[in-house]
Length: 288
Picture 1 (cartoon, rainbow, N blue to C red):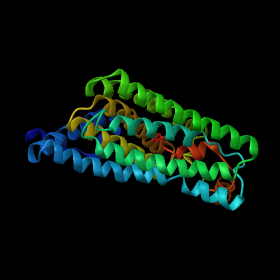
Picture 2 (picture 1 turned 180 degrees about the horizontal axis):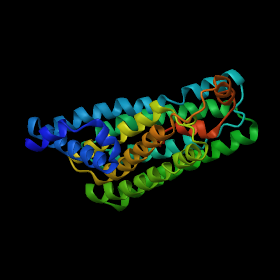
Picture 3 (picture 1 turned 90 degrees about the vertical axis):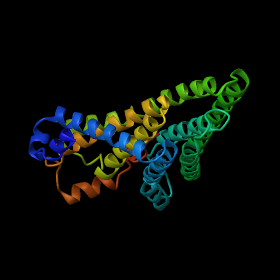
Picture 4 (picture 1 turned 90 degrees about the horizontal axis):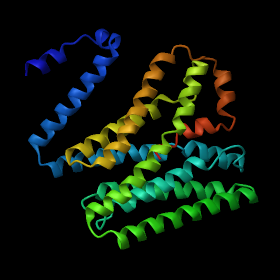
């Protein structure tokens, strides 16, 4: 179309100068791509393809804390590292596994596969963390973990016994999942604040910021192909968080100290903020 032809010839420098136009352009291209994808193949096939890409990126985020645990293993102690991001991700993944069950939200196999994988990985991290923790911390982390499993069990039981349609069940679990996923995105705010104050991106690695952004975008596309409001909201926040991180990286990359000795000194010290940046909660993260 004439609009698309015009977009392809926009000067990159002009896009950089006008951030609002960049976001509008990205949104337009994203929606246009989703529409074309739906026209070329069935919604089910398109959703499966996008979901597989989402699984791959999410798996990368779940595996990103491995260097932290290699460091813990070498030190034979957890020192100042915290279990909080891993406990949060366990709860987040467990709730999304429940959400993806056929009796709750049918046709959500890819939601189950990545969150079940994430749950197993995070539990392994916690097992290592508990093993190298002093006795009081072993008890504290263990009790939190048991409490989370009991909570998820209660949620699953209430879902099956109190609600009798897929819509009711998915709404109940979906609301809880979005709430806890949203809380996980509070953690990166401390990192972003530190970046702004120090004018340094040392504690916000570019690959993880990019992966967080792409992960959010991919799952937003997944949610839009066959509309899922809960996956859309949760991962929309993730995409926004990742986008802000990328903008901050672009703004402060040049002002980041390049002193290798200073960087090595910081990386050799346990740093909970650095740890959080690699946990998605994904953050992820997300992931959790």
